[in-house]
Length: 293
Image (cartoon, rainbow, N blue to C red; front, top):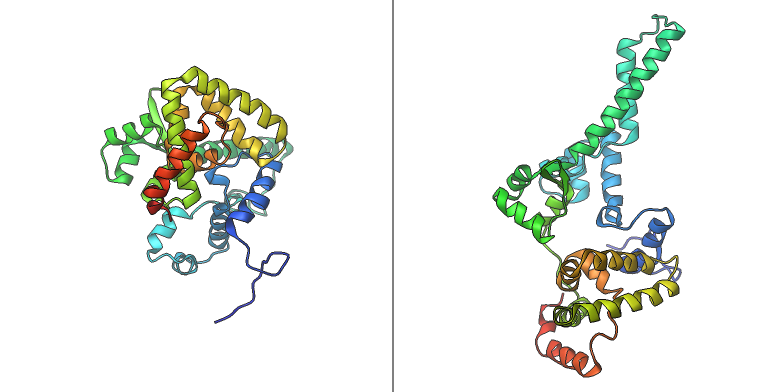
């Protein structure tokens, strides 16, 4: 079956997801003053679509079908993000209960009522934020693992966390991301990984020298790419370098999405000599490319 495309390139062809992400979506996110992350990627549009349908009264079963989910329960767990209109409808319903049309309010009553609802909205906001985070025990239950394994993930940097008092809290979306199968790297991404693993070896042998070279490259690249998407990733490299060797090593050798993007904007040019670079690429051609998507 052939259907017309709703969105096309200037030549009326199909839009490449990665090209649109790099050239349109991410620059728009940066221009809006938002730091590009997994949570603010194009996949957020899918969440917006699902949440909007739920807010309009669509059934979970129908929505699951639209999204291609076999289990409506999964749809319910993942896509029940509240939209502003839903909160407004809830407030209006409670207003109707307590403030009937035939009930008169004095000016003082109105002031008290406004203060009450302002406090209610603040408390609701706090509850929403806290609801996005899980304890390590809750995360372990979701992952089907032990609490110690979740703690290990946090300590290795594989699961971002925040501290609330003496306890770690992790975002539900980060835990659920661990449950999804990881997409295989493309040939170019895998080749970049091999080269940066060699850089990691040089970093371990000479931390000051390698980080010094990276710092010089960063200064030059930041001047060249001011106000672009590249600047965002270069700033992230700055943060990694400021955190120390361990943080840089993880970015050089990890296969997670952030590390893949960081390596596409690498400040480590010149760390490997040309003979070293050729040797790594020759090894990659012999065996490394077989893992590529």
